Picture: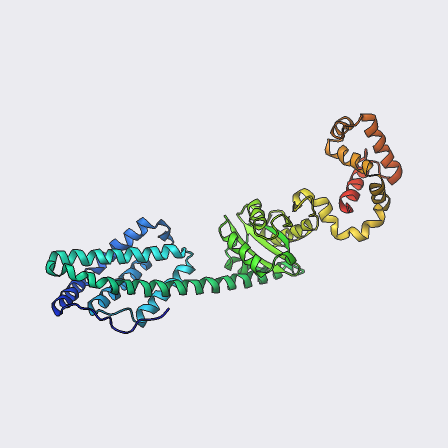
Length: 397
């Protein structure tokens, strides 16, 4: 922000300038008590200021008041020291997580109260110069503009710096959790720095990184900050990982799905909620495996719902010879596969499964028997039904 170092020329008379200087001196003498009242009003009008320690808040307001009234008395704009102080305040409020509009609101409360004090003191002690106060409007506006501009700029710089730090930490944390074995000791301080409770419950979500270029990922990060819980995301190879605590996974999935241009095609795998950092690593594995089960008909897959096929997904090639006949039968006679799935989904009841498929029970029973003949898996037995479902779900394409 441009600093304004040249003195402001005003048409004020010497008597008016002396009166204004006296007013500012009297107010400055009372600033220790005045600052307490200003802090009280700010915190009453902006309740979120509770994140700022009261003593720290008072110190900032007291310093700001002294510098402002000195500048008004001397008829000058803010100097380098005041600008540096405003930038320090901006960085500090960003660190404390106070929204920038609330910080600016507090500035305006402070300047409003300063103007009211000047007006009250002039009315009581120098009524003949009340009209001269109009000449202070430009000067006070300059103070507001310069200080809030620099505070806002520093606030933004701190937010960007902190975001880069968080993204870097998230990358390192996810790498430690993906290591074999999991590097719990290395991960713990990074997790704490990101705001996680290392002994708390973690839940991961996994998205295909190819669908998430930098701009979309930044939009997702921004949306995550508005959700309940502690949530961080970063790419890890071919995956975009989101790791959360005390959050709603459905809300995270909805936030991701709402980001264009792939609104209707967002694929997401959701892991189990698991305790501790070792559990976080397992949840990431869950989410990665669940992502592999997404398709056109199901864009969000929970490991809790698809654990069987998702858990065996990494063994699909090795296990394929066991299910050759079943996979071939499902492709050539899909109505037989449909009967097996309906039988499983309807509590192993032939009658209920038949109703679900609008078949006669004898027809459903025939299809189950035919499946047994062609595949070798008897869906009416425990092992046969499990093997049949694995074949149908693991090799569904």
